[in-house]
Amino acid sequence: MSRLSIILVLVVVLSFTKAAFSELCNPQDKEALLQIKKELGNPTTLSSWLSTTDCCNKTWQGVVCDTDTQTYRVNNLDLSNLNLPKPYSIPSSIGNLPYLNFLTIRSNPNIVGAIPPAIANLTKLRYLYISHTNISSQIPDFFSQIKTLVTLDFSYNALTGSLPASLSSLPNLVGITFDGNQISGAIPDSYGSFSSLFTSMTLSRNRLSGKIPATLAKLNLAFVDLSRNMLEGDASVLFGSSKNTQKIILAKNLFAFDLGKVGLSENLNGLDLRNNLIYGMLPKGLTALEHLKTFNVSYNGLCGEIPQGGKLQRFDASSYAHNKCLCGSPLPACT
Ligand SMILES: *[C@@H]1O[C@H](CO)[C@@H](O)[C@H](O)[C@H]1NC(C)=O
Ligand SMILES: *[C@@H]1O[C@H](CO)[C@@H](O)[C@H](O)[C@H]1NC(C)=O
Ligand SMILES: *[C@@H]1O[C@H](CO)[C@@H](O)[C@H](O)[C@H]1NC(C)=O
Ligand SMILES: *[C@@H]1O[C@H](CO)[C@@H](O)[C@H](O)[C@H]1NC(C)=O
Image 1 (spheres, rainbow, N blue to C red):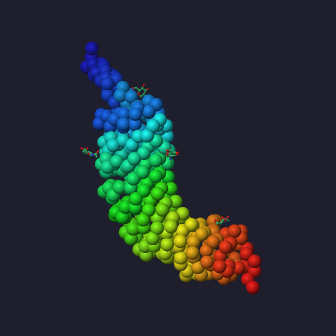
Image 2: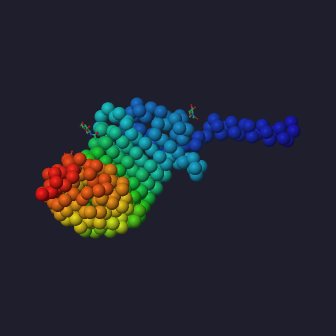
Image 3: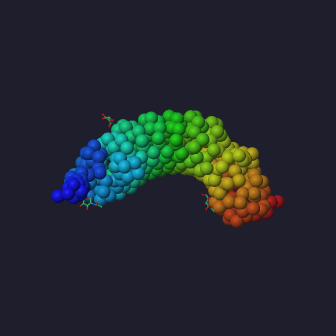
């Protein structure tokens, strides 16, 4: 045999060996995943997670490895719709997947209990979605240690307790989505000191109470939804003509402030203030809002003529109904 053919044979044999005996999945990641499966009672929805197969070859349901960096560490785990037959906690073995960027646990009514402290070990976590489960307990303070976090979504669970004040120290946080829980207490003063990246705050359908902190005036939120709580005070801090605000949803609270004095972002496309204690006149500037699509100020203490022009007459009378003395189209003429 020539030297060249020996080399060729060697190359073929070596690549064959690699294909047959090595896998891309990191052994520690595989162990953690199999442990997660076990902690969830080996559900049939995870039957594709097998010790004999490569967790990185896309056959493992909900598991994605990092192919960009060629490290093949598990960086994305989706444990949604597991159809668990009985209640289980969020597996603490998730804390042993240190390269996770994305963790999603959606639509699992049988996921219950607290958010495990092991999650604090995920120091590369950027996007965390735990929604439509039955996890209860408080939102733990340890999230403020995961400096990489971009988005926290805990919508529609059974979370209780108060909002962790420490979240505002997260330097990369863009938004929090905590709607549909039983979170109580006040919005912390510290929430005025989120970084300038922070543009989205959804706290609707909870049991929040107390006065909205004046510190929130410092935020430049594109989207804010505080509806269906028991919040009070001067929510005009969320407004401002120099902000990039697109939607302000404050419906069904106890907010009381003079709407006539607020500045309006020219990008505003949704304003829902229904069922509050808001007083004063509708600001003339509303007629200049070109993008306004949803608008409802009904059930407040507003007074005076509805400014005529712009998009304001496109909304029907129910958007203006049940105020102290609003008048003019689409309501009856002022007398
Ligand atoms: C993944 O691995 C299993 C077992 O090793 C194999 O049967 C399957 O064909 C592989 N799938 C891909 C897409 O490589
Ligand atoms: C929570 O559990 C109850 C039953 O205990 C169930 O009816 C409900 O759908 C669950 N909630 C969610 C969000 O899955
Ligand atoms: C966090 O990680 C360390 C080492 O990586 C490990 O020893 C510890 O058990 C983990 N903690 C939790 C709560 O998972
Ligand atoms: C405005 O809100 C009131 C009170 O909730 C509601 O009855 C009405 O249908 C709403 N109108 C529009 C156009 O959304």
